[in-house]
Amino acid sequence: MSDPAPSLRVSVPGASVGGVVGVGVGFRPELAADLLAAPRTVDFVEVVAETCFASPAARREAAAIARIWPVVPHGVKLSLGSAAGIDLDRARRLGALCRELAAPVVSEHVAFVRGGGREIGHLTALPYTLEAVRVVARNVAAARRALPDIPLLLENAAWTLRFPGDALDEGTFYAEIAALTGCDLLLDIGNVYANAVNAGVDPGALARSYPLERVAMIHLAGGVREHGFYFDTHAHPVPEPVFALLAAVLSRTGPVPILLERDAAFPPFAALAAELAAARALAEAAPRDPTSDAARPAARALPPRSSGPPGSSEPSAALALAQAHVAELLTAPRDPAPDAARPFDPGEIARSRAILQRKRVDDALPLLPRLAPHRGVVERLAARCVDASPRAPRLTAVADAIRIAGAAQADARLAPDAIVDRLLLRARFVGPAADGSVRPRLLPFVRRERLPGGRVIWVVKGMGSSAEVRLVETRR
Image (cartoon, rainbow, N blue to C red; front, side, top):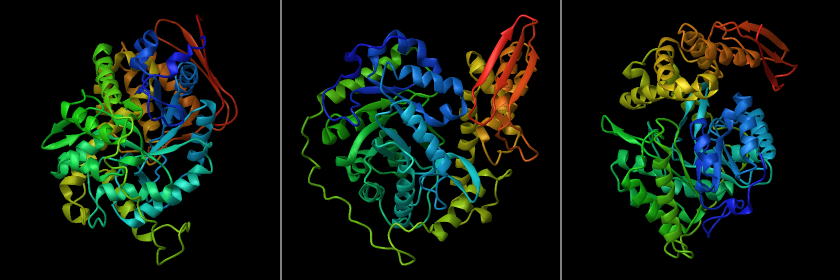
């Protein structure tokens, strides 16, 4: 693939982060052909870091597209809000990916995805407290030691359940986060809108409570209201009220890079291109030197905790226990009794558990690239597999993908692709074990399979969990 013209890398004048400007989109296999046919539709792309970790093909694809657009790695499993600390190996892998892609910027979420040793499998919002701010700051400091010297942007999370006893309002919480970590924000407009609608407050007022002078990039996505609750799904068109909120925010931030997220139910590319064009037009219309909130004071430095000095690595015991309780409530095989859910709202726990089941399917399917062309059929099969099996305690997406590929082998239409996908996963992971978990395969792997129709494939992996996996197809 030849290097692109330099004009592909510059579009909308105005604020940039790491040299990234204009509009971008989350790179997904379903969008690849259209994006490569019309590369000037976007100025940069985003890849989910964990997909690159789990799929060598996705990682190679990310490296290839980095020759066309700036590529922003977007983390979803570092768990910067975990009171027990972050997995430093994950941070090192994220740093290695950033260096491999020559990434201009990297982003992660102000959320936790594990507690008490349990993987939740979804971004769970933190309590809005000073202690949670300190936890994030400690974890950001640890992560930065593994990341290259590029901007780290922190994204606001949508909540599906709230911790009781918030001490701060949402906007002040993120102002404190930005001040104590030194990181600018990746403002997810869809999440702001969802939180406002679900809390019964004005979305514009909630957005204005954020430290908009610290916004360096914006995420934009669609959602849907179900049973009285608005979900930021990344699978629906961006609604007009969210575009209106984007315009209001841009009037205060000036033009900043905007990225459209679409992860499922992909429409014709022309519809996504129209949403990107609408976002670009709003950025071009934004004032170059906004003044409305420029005088907002920075969040104050936090006083020391009574249990230790600022920057102490000692985790918050109370927050760690609360996060472990939430993780258990959300991942237990059976719905918890109302009394067991206390002090959390049982309805919010039930809603969050239902979302997590959907999320398991969303996380597993990208690990099955050969089955991707059969998405509609595979999604229904995957939902049945997820409903019939408990969540694996570790590497849940991989464990689910192996099960889904195994079930797909029983369908004659899917069998050839399912066999290949499952074999490629088995080359890199051992399991599932009795508890449903999988672990990276450290030893070499060599396996031969005969596909329906007579083709023979070999899958070979060398020593080490990160060794390259090679697929060889023969006619015998």
